[in-house]
Image (tube, rainbow, N blue to C red; front, side):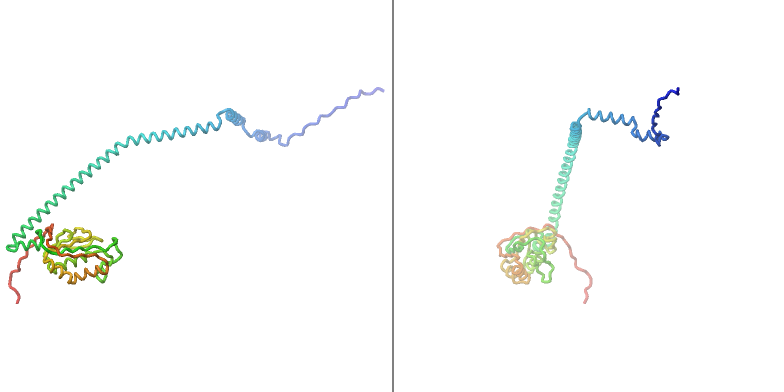
Length: 300
């Protein structure tokens, strides 16, 4: 029996199941190729250049060298500017020194003129005193301090206590009237001078400064001023008069005892001696005043 020729069995090729996201081809492409080709190529070129380019240590050295060159350039420019400005500053300094010298010379000249005018005024005042004094013109000149004098008298030296520092803590206006700091105060010298006048002194000077009836002894801090001129210790007081009698009367007076108490209680140093001949200068300024009697009927 003839039959139909047998056909070889046909193998069926298994087919790959479709991807679930086959319908989303655009999104799939973006996910699979997230880096753009252009960016990828640029990154590759940069990597190649870095691998084959300049070493990092060399680049660091070149950067340091460039920084040093820049710093040197800044220093050089600054030095050049300083050299340019130096002559101008030196010139200004010289001009300032010249101006100070000129002003100082002017002030010295004015001070000399003041001294000359003061001497001239003093001479005229002394002349006026002599002319108005009549027969007693010499005595008027002595008592007013208008003329220099010499003669016997006493020399009294008053000095601060030893190891006395400036600006003590004591109050010179304390209730006892004493200066408890060990320093000689203006009120101490006032009492000394008044005591000498009262004891018979005819002319008095302190450290070469002639005193008159109008002289003022004041204080400026720890300094003593006589007619606004500062004095420094020790204070040497010269008094023209009957030497022995003047010395005895002063030491026995209340002011002499006051000075002795300062010495005993506060260490203020004093020394008095009788001198045969003392020389006192004239007062630098003498004020001339004229008194006139009041005319009219007196009261009974």
